[in-house]
Length: 248
Figure: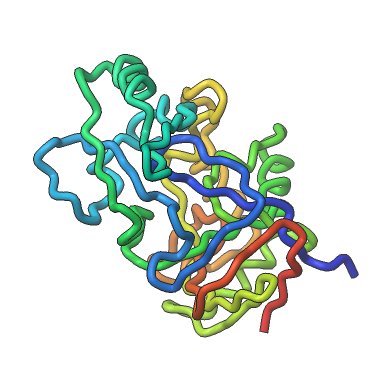
């Protein structure tokens, strides 16, 4: 039997924008993936610098162009990364706004879609199965997940979610996590990471495919539009490509 392993790790420093492939992800129970979704562009400048639903920000769900924007950073005198002002100006112009109102969490919390401390995990076999169902290859980057794994059967990862919140643990390398939820997908997955355009009706396809597979729906809301799982780490650690993935 093929062993399930991590084949890629990614962080998304700016919520809604393109992610970056990493050599490792630093994990902390306080925030999930350190640095992930640290920054976001507020649609309303008066929004407080606190967690808010994704509808409050420019993200792929409401602004397809966001997914094709690759963040650019500069480094200050203390070695801290800051968004490049020139890049911010260029993105504002592309989005048709005068300026971007940046929310910076400074690492105190994550602006992930749920106010919890998650590491997101996607099974590439499940992505391939969806591609086979619609008759075209699908870029896993559409799903914007931190940890890409391979070696499982399609959608076998959904068996790790027992109720809501979940009670089953997995170990990724030396990091132990509790798998809490399946990931219900919004329209952002329909935005092409290269062109920044909505080009595939993947929500409808997921709903159709999962019903045909006999899936009972996400434990927390019964949605069939699922891809990937969300897991909470117990302790600090590091996840790297090549790490084995072991369910308990």
